[in-house]
Length: 62
Image 1 (cartoon, one colour):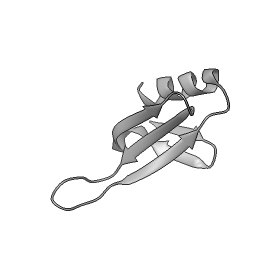
Image 2: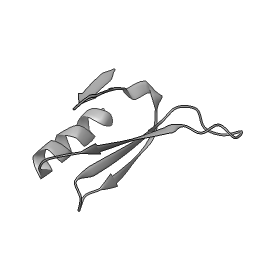
Image 3: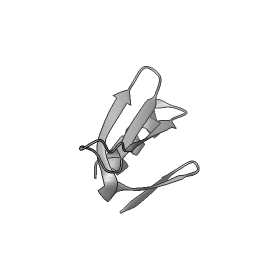
Image 4: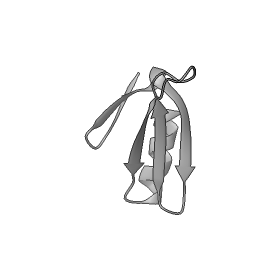
């Protein structure tokens, strides 16, 4: 499943984990291969308000 947020179209099947910063309304999405020296990527997503923040988390964790 793909989730769009701003200019990012994220394949949710490639998400390794998500880090949340509720105070700043930011979601950090970590994707790609990990382990054995491989580094994945991190996509920082910012939200305008708490509702958008909660909706984004719900979409990413669905």
